[in-house]
Image 1: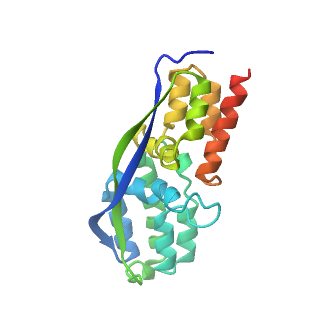
Image 2: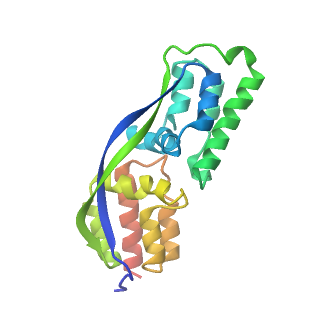
Length: 218
């Protein structure tokens, strides 16, 4: 079986949520703070939300949409923010620009709503992480599939989703290793295409294992 030129080390993590000290009470304030919030905060309220809600196949795709509807009762804007698909962006900067474009356009079209206070503030947060190597490594595709099978859900999330911020959202740790260390670009692309909205973490695990086993058998 093909040996990788670099082993894959499975890592897990623990995290706490840190409140950044900035909050929005109106749509205008949310729009302004979206421009200045840290990259980690934008990531937390979009990508991290998917873990917090365990990849719900229905409902809100980011915290901004949730607040706009629940606290501000702005259904149309909430739907527009829900429609922002994080898979379409390869940088936090581009994602931030789209979020600010959507909120800015809505405020322009609905000026009477820009300064209406929400029922509760929106607090900008970040995720502070501590990573822990599990000691499990993979040198072949078979070992990789076995590692994914036995990995914790926290580890799956770390490598499949959190890594996107580190890799500038272009891919995930699994696909990066399959492409660069095992020279399997087609398999890497198949893993990359696993839908982060319509799968639970267990679903992601199952699909990765199925894809890997299919290539092992080739």
